[in-house]
Length: 214
Ligand code: GLN
Image 1 (cartoon, protein in one colour):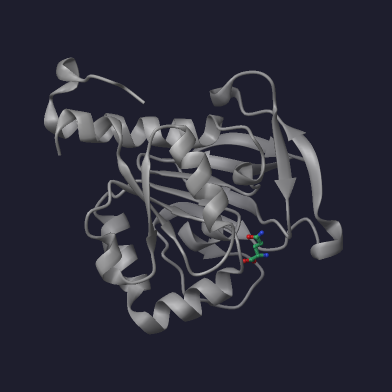
Image 2 (tube, helix red, strand yellow):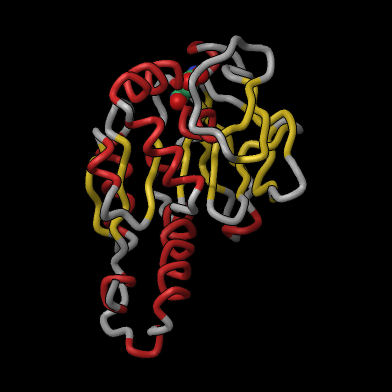
């Protein structure tokens, strides 16, 4: 990838269901190019990927049948940076507490609880303090949201709500139980795209020649 391309990384958005266009808009706002991922071939040219909210069981079923889930797991395991929101966070977990087995991408050393705050009627909004994003707190939109039950040693908790971790990251993954794409706040997408850029620049060593950033 050229240095200029590294400034405008290509981020795929898994387009099985959920707030796909909202994620695309947020990613475009922070300088990324976007494309929709519906099959394994769509993964090829990506520098990063977003797994949106929706229903994790549906993702697992649809993407499992098409072979996309296996291809995605292979790319993510090899270090493709990924942002997962709500159901996307569930998909990246290595395990689910209190639920039956379901197909996952896995790989992140977290265990999550689905629908942890209650079902649809319990969807809510709350300010969430995310120190890595600075002030003010983000407007957390929680929709049948999971929380994180346990994190492993390589995982940094980015935010808590009600005493439970609701956002976290490791070396290549950022997850949030809430929906930043449904707000105007681009800070979490910016953090993700910056990490993708750093990763790309790290392999290119061409940071000095960057023009027209963002
Ligand atoms: N409750 C959904 C699940 O378990 C997640 C909801 C969401 O993504 N907004 O997969």
